[in-house]
Structure formats: C-alpha cells, structure tokens
Amino acid sequence: MSSRILLAVPFAAALLAAPVAQAQDKKDKLVPGDFTATVTLGTDYLYRGISQTDENPTIQGSIDYSLMFNESIGIYAGLWASNLNFRDGNEATIEIDVSAGVKGEVAGFTWQAGMIGYFYPGASSALNYDFYEFAGKIGYDLGFVALSGGLNYSPDFFGKSGDAWYVYGDAKVPIPGAPFDLALIGHLGHQWIEKNERYGAPDYLEWQAGVTATVEGFTLSLVYADTDIDKADCAGGRTICGARAMFTVSKTF
Image (tube, rainbow, N blue to C red; front, side, top):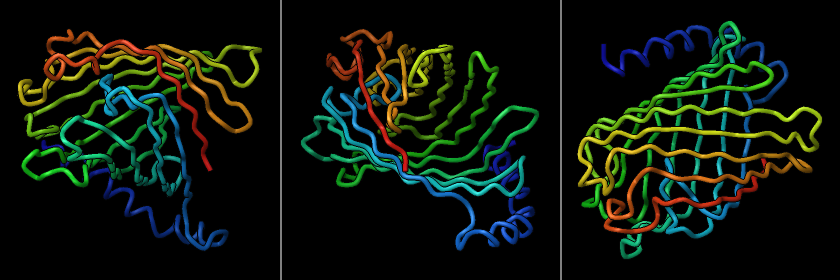
C-alpha cells in the first residue's frame, strides 16, 4: 500500500468528524481550533545533527494551528522558518518548512501522521534543494519519563539524493523536586540516504543529550550533540557534522 493511501485513511476519518466538532467549537471561538507562535534563538541550527548555519547562531519562528474534532483525532498545520548558511555563494539564506497532517490520542498514546515540505527561497532550481517527506510519530508519557519516536521518508531527498529514511527516538526525564521544571533530555536518530555522494555525507547516526528548563515562560535547553560522520566524509571535509554544545531559548505565545 502506498504512503499516500496510508495517509488518506486518517484524513478521511478526520473530515467525516469535522462538522459536529466545528459546530461545537464555534460556540466559543470565531475561528475553531488553536493557534500558537514560537520564537527561538540558538547558538546553532542542527538538522539531524548537521549544522545548517555554518556553526553560527540562528533565529527561528513558527506558527502552528490545530483543531481536535474529538479526543481521538484532529488536524494540524504549521509554518516554520530559520536562517541558514550552506556556503553556496549565498544561494540560500533562509529555510521555510510547511507541514500538515492528522493527530490524536489512543489509549494514552499520542500519534500524528502527515507531510513536511522543505523550501529554500533564493536557491537556484538547479541545486534541487527543495524536497518533501512523509512523517509519522508516536509518544507515551510514563510519568517518570516521556518517550516518543518517529519515521520520516522522502522519495527524493535534499539535493536530489534519492530515497531517504530517518528513524529517531526521544526521551525526557523530569527531575523530581527540581526548580523550573528541570528535565534531562536525550535523542538518537539514524539517517539513510540512497545517493550519499549527492547529499555530501554517508548514512549516519546522530544524537543529543542535555537539560531543559522553563523560566518565566521561556524554555531554555543546553545539549551536547554529535554524529558518527568522519570529518573527511562531511561535505568535503567541513566541521559541520562534528560534536558541539548548543544552547537555545524559545518562547511560545
């Protein structure tokens, strides 16, 4: 069964449930659903362990929308943007991601399935930077630890590098009694790429470990990040795949 058919099933279920839920939501809101906006400042922008800003600071922003038809299913959409620097003669200086899909909760498990489009305004079409992915994610909060994981697939990855699969897992462990909702965070992912020479890196592992806290409504995170890519195999010998400490601060409105 194709990925498009798999995604069509939950979308159809969501649309069938929409009229009743929208009627109930409109009693309280002019526009049904919820909007949020987030601004993030960071010492670097890592995409799956590789710096997208040539190891320089980043500013990012997003607008997200969600509408739950009932406790089990709803829809979401998002628009996200960041500065970047590929050392490509200033072909691309910004990345814009557009996402949409369905989400819900079943027996305590949260889930979502959708698509993400990655766009690089200003870059020559001959570079083939733009691409899209199908994305699925599932999570469960055990109280002492919140776990989540997902799988992304692109039929033609960044730079026309062919089929690409990405699988990952995340964990967040709250520290009992600690101030500012202090928690330990960990992440592990693996990226497979069909045409490694076009992408500029081999298939690789990437990971992060660190702490996060909430202070006066701001989320602060400090992590150590690394990949198993040798410098010689990283975009022609660059250091953007190497180990680094990264600090971010974000605020959601």
